[in-house]
Amino acid sequence: MLLWADSLKARERAVRAGRSACERYQLQFLDDTVAFARMRLARDEDGQIKIKRTYTFEFSDTGNNRRHGAIVMLGGEVADMHLEPYRMQ
Image 1 (tube, rainbow, N blue to C red):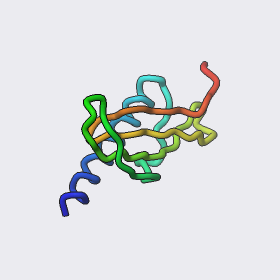
Image 2 (image 1 turned 180 degrees about the vertical axis):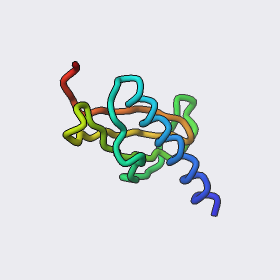
Image 3 (image 1 turned 45 degrees about the vertical axis):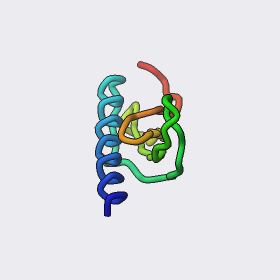
Image 4 (image 1 turned 120 degrees about the vertical axis):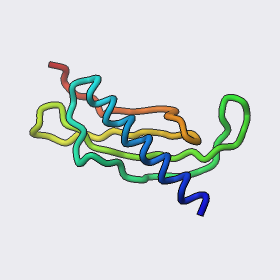
């Protein structure tokens, strides 16, 4: 039960992070959601073991295409984010 609640919170934070990044770079955050891709254990900067989750999402730079992005959560924090290359306008 605790893992489920923690996973739900991490997913909600990943959605907010994806939406925020898309707003910052003037992109469209498509489908208003992220998809779970991977989960494993990893150590944070202090050496503590945390759950590392990867979520994928799609965004558009033109409104006519779909590009891929990924958000890596370590515990409840965003550890990394990747956006597929796109043409800046």
